Structure formats: structure tokens, C-alpha cells
Length: 76
Length: 261
Ligand SMILES: [Zn+2]
Image (tube, rainbow over all chains, first blue to last red; front, side, top):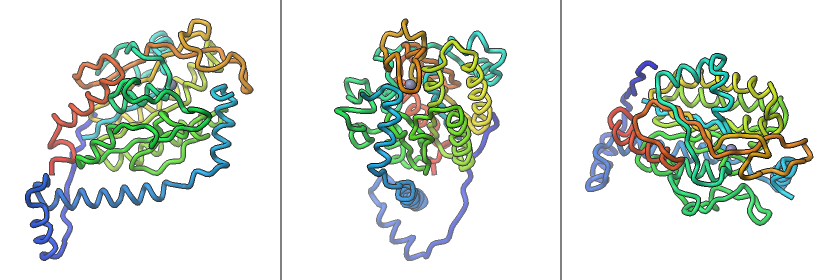
């Protein structure tokens, strides 16, 4: 198993925004603006994935699942 | 660094060890890592066992016993625990969970995936489809180099219930062996684990299924001997220890994992 290093790259954000974030994270657990920005972006992406992934689980789906559970004997 | 946890529902040494020369990836990983039998303290029931593995809680603590309660399907929100992915995500790690069958349909975290047959694949076509779809989704995730991926294959459980003691079972272990070989290429640290073992239905301590089902006769059932193969040092003695092993590894690996910006 070869070592796969985690790599980082830069993105640009406006300086005033950077300063604003810098003030915002003062006294929080975040030790750098990059840390905070990474956290926020991951949150947003995760939420989007969740929304996309959430094909509504319909009554019909539930019946199909129960049918499979019944077929396996999990459900009377 | 990527930590990869591969769950193989119902995998048992009873099939792996006597056929080890035909299961090259199992053989290789057992050689480079360590392996043991995990003896369950709890009833060998998939819903509860996977919940213990990924929450670090005992069944008395997480109180999740089965896929169905009072005629209703249980969902993630019915289970009042934080899982390893919930906790590490809050700590800014990139964590994914794929096809985890503590509920039906299986649970996914930070990835979009539609489990095959609602996580209850019934036919050889569906078994193959699960194998392929879970593998290709796992590879897609691993290419993004997450800090942790937990992924579970459920097909062996289904196959063994209906075909225990038949040659076809080994055929499917070989296919599992081959996909493990593909996934492990992306991992620095790994745990391969089952939630319980398997045995003749008559020898089973719990009969999770009736002898006759609309899909055929049940020939095998769960026993308390799960498999574990790993290349991390943490001493895993019971299912719940997997959770603590991952936490410890993430903590020690800080700087190597994504958290260390
Ligand atoms: Zn199981």
C-alpha cells in the first residue's frame, strides 16, 4: 500500500472576507481561516449530497421493503 | 491517509480458512496484518451488531435490536446515538459511510447511493449487482481520498442463509475476495470485519429466520464468531472496539489526516 499524501491547494477570496473570517474565528476551535473555510465548504457539500440522495422514501417503497423482509421471514 | 473499514456481513472463517489458497487477497492481508476471531457478547443480529460496531455502544446502550419494530421499519433517526461518521465529521474529517445495514434500506453518510434491492438482494443477479455497485461507488469515493470510508457488503448473508454447505458459497467469497483486492489499493490503514459468523441452521444459537420462507428453505444461520483482519495495532476484542480503534487511529494520525490543516 503506497503512501497517498493529502495535498492542498490555494483558492482566492476577497481580502475583506478573509479579515472578517479571521475575526469571526477568534476564540473558536478553528486555528486558521483555511480550517474554517474547509469546514464550511464541506458542510455545504454534505448538505447538498444529502438533499440529492434523498429520493423520497414512499409508501410504495416501504411496502416493497416489507415484502422482501416477509419473503426472508423477518416479518410475519 | 485513508482509513478503510470493509464490512462483510456474515463472513466466517469456516469458509475462509479451509479455502485460503483460493482467496488470495484474504491470504495476503492476513499475512501483512493481524487476524482473529471476534466472539460476540451479544446476540448475532445484523441490525444490532453493525450499530455496535459503528457507534461503540452495546445493545443495552444503543437499544437497536432489529430492522422492524412493532411492524414499522426503523430508521436512522429512531436510533439515539452518534455514529463514528457523525462525530468525526464534526471534527472536520472527510468521512463517508456506504451501504451500512443497521437499518433497511442501508444507511449512507456524505454520499449518494441507492442500495440494491433495498439492501436485501434476493437473486444471483441482485447479489452481483450489489457487489458491482457498492464496489464502483466505493472506488469513486476512495479516489477523493477521504479520511475514512466505512463500506459494507450484505450479499454473503443472503447467500449463506439459502445455500449454506453448497459450493456456490465459496464462489461468492471469491468474488468478495477480488473486490477487496481492488479497494485495499487505496487504503493506508484497514479493518475488515463481519458482524457475526455462520453455521448450520440447527446449530445456530438464534434462528433469525424461520426454516421455510417464501424464497426457500433456510439452511444456515448466524453464530457468534465474527472475523477481523487489520493492520492497526489497537487491540480489538469486541465489536464496539472498532469504533474506539478508529477514533484512536484518527487522533494519532492527526496531521496525516485531513484535520491537520
Ligand atoms: Zn449480518
